[in-house]
Every structure is written in structure tokens, then in C-alpha cells.
Length: 403
Image (cartoon, rainbow, N blue to C red; front, side):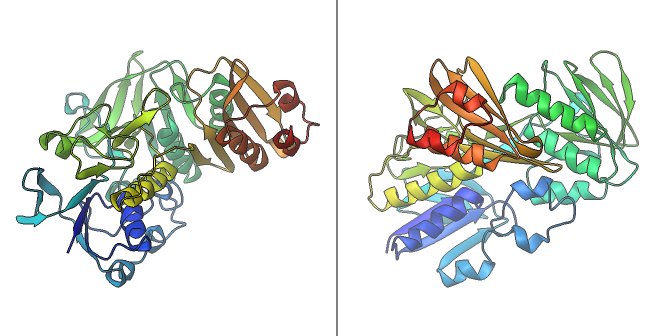
């Protein structure tokens, strides 16, 4: 009987094994995860779960009984230590498991502060796993003083939750502006104003020099401009990197992640990859997407291809972020934009439309789901729209789909 092994029990891994069964695979499936918990959602960790508004059971993508009912063997809390592509085996917890096909959905890991500048002090946290958030929960209390390092979406979401809990928050971003790597200046300005309206002290163009501590616990920070801060805890949100150690030791080709072809196959024909860890062909180059929608879509495509579908993966990127009472929805990829068109909506809603020449690339929509949906449909269809019509608040956006 054929045996498919999946390493990585996150969103991509869970989606892949579920699709294998849905598409009729009746062989053995083993899903291996380093964390001792069934696959769960990550986005709510730094929001509803940290706020205490979501029970841990609601994080689970599926109840544990689903895997038993689908005859999917779970090996949780047991990181894989080796892959042998020649013998077609993986080693986990001392056991050697043979596979016929292997999928790597190993995800990504957060960058951490070096120990040399205090990154190993107690009270310094990252936001990636359930254990990470459980560890910081007791620190996020009213009256505490927090330093958030990094002005990307993870840092801003953490700042929003901390501020809502009554924490005095200082956020530092080494770049000239928050969200500089991922968004236009207009989106940065929107969220800068939003956070400052909620009492967050945002400092841009300022890096962290080092953390100070007492008895092994963080107590303060020294910024690159010489400013000193008293802090009770630190949250580090300075990006993530793909988890490729196993793939590298197995001799697989790497290229900003695990290199895969249009179908999700790695340089070894019996090994596949999907999700944050996979870098795939796109628009004449290569792309690696860090998002839940990509993890699901790519993993499901890979599952079908493992069963012989020969289906090329075509991404339709979209993302979201929740901060305070604002829902940001993003459609498309803004790489290479040279013009921003602003559209205002009702009750403070606003959207920023990214163009390269006459081509619509992406949309950032704040509390404007209609703008997001219309923009996404245009982008997914490879269509554009008249910038002047978009900017006119009297334009019925739905009419853009018919033009």
C-alpha cells in the first residue's frame, strides 16, 4: 500500500492531508508535527487568542477525531531529524518511516534578536506558535510597559492587542516608515495615525541597539539614537524565514525557500513542498508567499498533483490584518508599482489602488470590503480599471467589472 508522509502540521500540512483523502487516496498517510498540538490557525494567536476572546479549541483547524476518522496517523511533538531521499525514509523520535511520496510543509520561523544584544533575556517574545503566545500572555497586562521591535504587520497587530489590554506600548521600526517593505506610504500613514490615536508611541527610522536586564529578565532598552526605555517585556516582530534545514540536509535545491516547479515538486521527484517554505515559478521569476490562503491553495494543488493531476499552481494572492476596529484586506502583489490611486468610502473607509503604468497590481482596503472584492476580481482576471473612475467616490465599483 502506498504511503504518503507529510512533514509539518500547520495550515499547509493539514490542508494537504485533508485533500488527499477528499480526492480519494486510500493509502497510508502520516502527518508529522514538531508541536505537541493538532494543526491550528496562527492568525488569531496575536489577536483574539491573546486578548482572551478565543478558546484554544477554536484555534484547531479540525478536531483531533477528524484525523482518526480519516485514517491519518498523527505524530505530534516529534520533530523529524533526518530525511533519506535514497532510501525514501524519514527519521522521527528514533523511528525510521518509509515513504512512497513525501511532502514538506515545514512553514517558517521568526527571526529572533541575537543573545549578544539581550535577545535571550526572559520577557523577550516572538509571535509564531501557540507556546509563544501562551508564554507572553501573563506579561500583557494593564499598566505594563512594552517594546515592540518591528513595524510590519506582526508587530502592529501585537501593538494593537497590547494597547487594547492597557499596556503602554512603544514600537520601533528601523526603516524610514512602518510597513515600508510591504505597503505604500499611504497605507503606512493610515496605520501610523491609527496606532497613535490609540496611544502607541511609534518611532520610525530608529533601531534597537541592545536590551538591558536584571537577574536574567529584560528591564530596559537602548535605542540606536541613544534613547533609553524602561520596559517590562519585548515582542520581536522582525520577519520570518522559511524552514529549510531538513530540505538542505536532504540535498534538495533551495532558492529563497525550497525550490519547487509549477506543480510543487522539488528537485527530488518523490518529494513535494507547499506553503511558507516553498518557492515556486511566477511571472518569469520565483515567488514565495507567506499567507494562509497560499498555504491552503498550494497545499491542495500539491495533494492533487501527488495523485497525478499535473495541475500548475497559479497563485491568487490575498492577505488580511485586523488592528483595533480596522480590517485591512489586500488583493494582489504590489511589486513594481509606480502610482497610488486613493478612493474614500463611507464611515472612514479608504482603499489604495496600486498601478504600474496602466496595469492594476494590488489593492489595500481598510474597512472597505466592496473595494477589496472588486479589486480582487479584476486582478484575478488580469484586468485593470480607469484610475480616475476608481478615485471618484460616486463611481459604482461594480460597474468596473462590466467595462
